[in-house]
Length: 626
Image 1 (cartoon, one colour):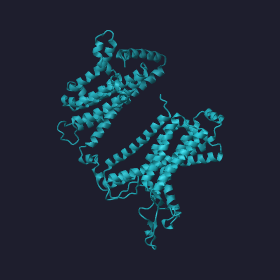
Image 2: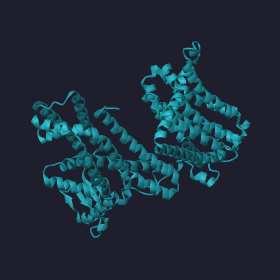
Image 3: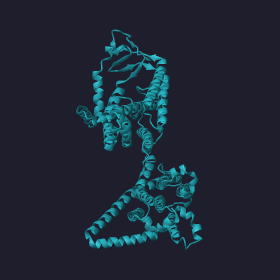
Image 4: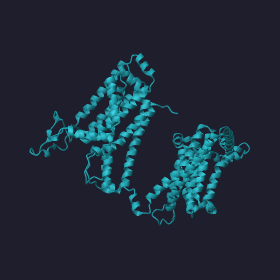
């Protein structure tokens, strides 16, 4: 913010605008008493709600802070936190909120040479670091001083972020050289410095104000409520540019959220240091028990695990890979089928569109848990018994116990996949300059793909191929019949049920996304494609779908994350996913909270990874920003 903008942001400018606006409101109120009464009621209601909300959460925060710091320096109570820990957690929450308001971290890494423009961010980080040695020096001897210091720091940080004139503070010596020319700018700096000085004064001399100490929560409730309403009134004047307005709105949001943020932070601090040793032990987030051997067995691939030998971390990794396999395959299948069904819904053929519509309405409105249960039971009853020896040319055996396929060497599978992936990357790079859709270009593309796939298949088939070997150790006892260990590749019925269920359910939603995105395109695009003689397939591939992707990808992002989260229903079909394994561990070990946190982080990390990949792809497809 330059000096001119800072001068416009001074308190005098705000007061003058406030007076003018009040005059306008009074004039309108005299002409429209009903509107005036409605405005007064809204103001009183807003005041009451904000005050009640602040009173509720600040009272709880005060109680927790009193328990967390009542024997500061002695740490005789298990719930006590040291000054450094209090500053790290509460001050860290304030700093994080302040940095989010400034929104300069990304630019700092992108344009480090312009570091002077980000002085506000450096100021916040510097104050946070300086607080560690300074807070113990203040020597708080009243519990209310601790509460005042941290909540007062949050209110002051919100005020500083709202003013956004830290850079002008460092320019104050230069401005004082010409005070007459920089009078308004100096006044603006003074308005920013004043609450900082008041905060420091009251933090060190709070005992001199017994009326404040007696009801500190109420004082902060009035302070936050009045400042919030004044800031909202100032923002409603729209007297600043959009960038300043956004920052003021962010500062207002932080100020209003301060009581709730403090409640959440202090509540978490309390549960981890509860005076009740049993409760504190329950919330002890340690994972040493994960290094012990796991007592139960699960069916996994590609990592094989053995119960009572492998530790729980290895079981968690194996189960995680199970969830990832189901999710990736379901995403691929539901995308392909979703495009087919979505396009079919727009078909001029009545039978095709009706069947696609029926599919969408049936599976979209069916609970996924019910669908998985039905698929699991149907697979169990329709597939033949294992003793029936049903097979396809002796290479594939299928029964209600699973499907046994020829097993290929894993390293050769990876090499074949890398060749196909390299060809795909090559065409992605080459197509940046434009797709060669001529007859020669199509022939060249087809030839390269055929050669690449042939080479990949050759590499895969050149490795060891393990065919399932059906053995009968005892002809008179069918229960002893089995597929020899180490031969073939087993696809369990549970895995197949999860793939089918997730695919059928998500396909219905993806189909609606595809249909809606295509219908959102202007009709002229299709007419133009028809006029230049493109076939229906060419229209779909070259004109319709590339443009529809702009609106499809954000919605597909959500659905792909839903596939990942919906895989947690694998317990219904007895599939050993990460949710099932952690759930059984909870019953065996009893460490509910650490395992729930591990489960939460697992699904959160997976969702963020999917979202990140889709956002990168979305950025490539469309670079339109507001």
